[in-house]
Image (cartoon, rainbow, N blue to C red; front, top):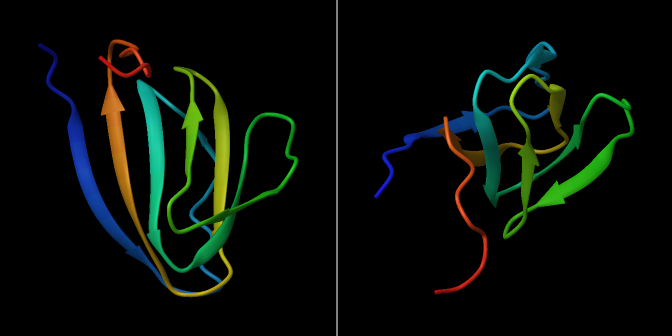
Amino acid sequence: MRLVDLRRRPIAADDAPPGQPTVDMTWVAELDGAGEVAGEDDLRTPIAAGTAAVWAPGEQHTSWATTDMTVVIVQSRAEPSLTAA
């Protein structure tokens, strides 16, 4: 068993939290709305409801809301398996 930090965060359209490196393994799962995410390569990739971005510890990342959106942020010190049990 692993415990993870889980946060729900609304983000207003045109909001762009400052870029930052991750401390732990980080997932940003889009619940509704639309936006873009980028890793260290600064390549913007669209993200919409039902998709998630994953960043490794220490990876620089940025996100932008193109519409009002709600995301769930999951952070874990250990990398869990993404395969079905």
